[in-house]
Structures are given as structure tokens and as C-alpha cells.
Length: 189
View 1: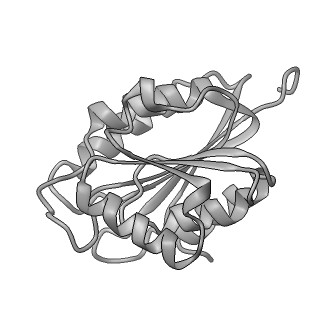
View 2: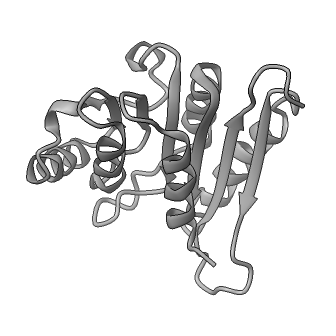
């Protein structure tokens, strides 16, 4: 069985074609941003959000090392800033909820901003597109954020979206879990 992050990448890779527009809603240290930039190719575009300047700088450096800076718009902003999002259609959106690895653990994603960003993401997601959320619950506020995000996702209309929850249940130390949303093609139940 795959860990949550690896399964998220597998789902995204299946939904993204060269030339696509995608979003890394929490770019952190840039690993998913690089992954997305490679997927979309030279004709595609990645919009990468983070509220921490340290994360933007780390992502920019990582993209530079891979020669991918020209495919990415780095946004030093919250992922719920609707004005900064690309217009529809978006093929994929990746979230890692929690704190920046190696950063200040008191700076975390919140239920309010994550649910607002999910609303934007679901509105702009193209049919066949995917949203993945790797959720870390071991920090203060993490379980509450998960509960609010899950509540939002379970309310999505089944005729338009399929929602998955994937988790390893016999692991210690609050392993991350995966939530994924796929927008259905019109007329498909």
C-alpha cells in the first residue's frame, strides 16, 4: 500500500496532461510544485501558493535547480485569495495541510482558509480533474481542520464529485491521510 503523499501523486498524474493549468495550494518546500511543473510540461502552468516567504524562497530555489521556474507563478498569498487563483478550468489542485516542514510549527493551515480554498478549487476544477489533500492531524488544530474539511467534502453533490478518504489505520504518531475529490464528467452519475 502506498503512503498518502505517493497515492496523491499517482491520482494527480492520472488527471493531468501536458499544457494543463494546476495549483499547488501549499507549496511548502517545493516538492509538489516541482512534481506539478514536470507534469504540465513547457506549455503548462503551475500556480503555487504559500503564506510564508521562507516557503516561497525554498520553492523558487528548488524549481531553479530543476530548470522549471518558467512554468510556475509563485504567489506569496493565502490559498483562499480568490483573486490570485487562475481562471477555470484547473486540472489539479494539491494541498498539504499542516505546517511547513523545517519551519515554524506555530504557523499552520486553518480550517477557515482551507475550506475557503477548497470552495474555489471545486468551482474551478474541470471535469476529470482532481484535488488532493494530504492532511496532517498531529499538531494543535490539525484534527479540527480535518473535521471541517471533511464536512465540506461530504457535502459535495454526488452527481458532480466523487470523494475519497484513504488512510493507514494501524500506524502510530498520526500518519497523514489523503482526501481526494474528482469532478465528474457531465451526465455521469
